[in-house]
Amino acid sequence: MKKIISWQQYFMSIAKLSAYRSKDPNTQVGACIVNPEYKIVGVGYNGLPWGCEDEDFPWEVREGSLYQTKYPYVVHAELNAILNSSYSLKGCAIYVSLFPCHECVKAIIQSGIKTIYYEDEKYNGTESDRAAKRMLDAAGVAYIRLDPIDIEIK
Image (cartoon, rainbow, N blue to C red):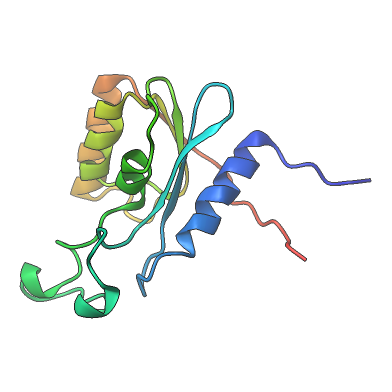
């Protein structure tokens, strides 16, 4: 009998596959935005803005002055997926491999996305996480943790 994956497994798999495009040596994140008709309307991963060459920026640096680290240069997967879409995102869901930071949550709320599905909650309880969840709760955006999936590709 063939194994059939659920819609949630399918879209989370797309998000996780997209993460493999990221050059981040520490945390690769992918995102997939899906409309209410189960059509993919945006995909993204954490990476540099267009025109910025990877080798010219400090991917490996996580500490020191902000300018010398990767943090001011990287566009997160969620924002990339939003910016890569040419559709209205009102009522959509976003599947993301890592729970969004507070900055991405602002963009998610403003775009009209109504549900976040995520697997990893690496930063649970941090100030960024608490601020993100406070905004999501206030805006009525649902966030649902999915069990990790492991799909064998042959």
